[in-house]
Length: 187
Length: 187
DNA sequence: CCGCAATGTAACACCGGTGTCACATCCTGT
DNA sequence: ACAGGATGTGACACCGGTGTTACATTGCGG
Image 1 (cartoon, each protein chain N blue to C red):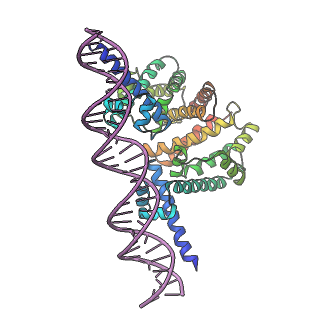
Image 2 (cartoon, chains in turn yellow, purple, blue, orange):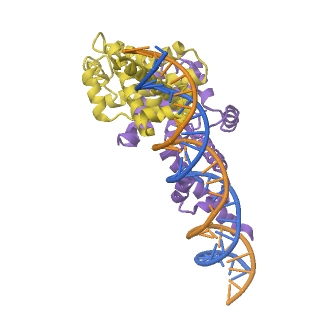
């Protein structure tokens, strides 16, 4: 019955959202027409699914949050030494690509409460891992944990943009990132 | 004779440009009306001085470049150990504030050739200092110099935004930045 | 194969930013 | 006090993005 309809609608919807992620990452001022073109869809269709621009943005935000949540889960932060866990997290986040750009450029804003909610759900988040590392001495206590979290995100984005702008191979940029980060947060 | 006229015009012009720097740093999509308001000037006046938006943007770019150039000169990169020189550079750049945001957010684009030209003029730039440090062993050779430069800018901006978003005292954010950076690029 | 859902096309009004003007006002140096 | 430059005010046309609608077309499922 509605299986088909739901299937078709859901597919188009996903198509539009993921096109929006890419388009907005490339150009923060991308118009709905741009997004529609990227999704190989009429502008009218975009409006049919999302009505207002802000609705699309909201959907994009949710999509990005889902990606982050999944990546965080894959990283398995509670396994092994804290430094290794953070390195795994970086590798996962690095693969997020455009979503990472969106998050970092502030197009997508994630509220404090949502972060907390995600941490809850992801089997403990970034902040706990940092705290764990500082507790067992594998991560330096000379830096605030808040700063370390901020630093991780920033250096991660640095690596991503480094690979994108200069055309350095991605794995190379990632290695530089991991090395720098490990040195920066070591005791 | 034209001393007065020239003086008045130059003052207003500077006022508008510096207001534009602040306004654009706060909101990348700031309208000319916003800039005019920030400069306490009529929108018409802005047009009188710059005609098109792009002209204003160009003027802003020049202003930012000048600020960077001056900051770089003040840092005196050829004095003392490379690590200290880079720390001094960070301190100077950190004080750039909104200009730093503009530069980092890509609103202001500086072409490769202009960077080179500035380095020439600033008594040797960032890249030479990194190279010097790597040559004398005070900076690790495990990281590419290109990456270290990229990292420095990024971590600097991280500290700036860290102080701005969370309301951490600026000097505190700067200290965290300098410490992280020193550790990251040490041998 | 029929029918409905999904999509496309075209046109429209609306809004905000832009760029330009004419005219009024203010301020400053002489 | 006067002349001229600098600025403000209000108005205008223009453009691009937005949101809506009516109607045509396609295509998939029953």
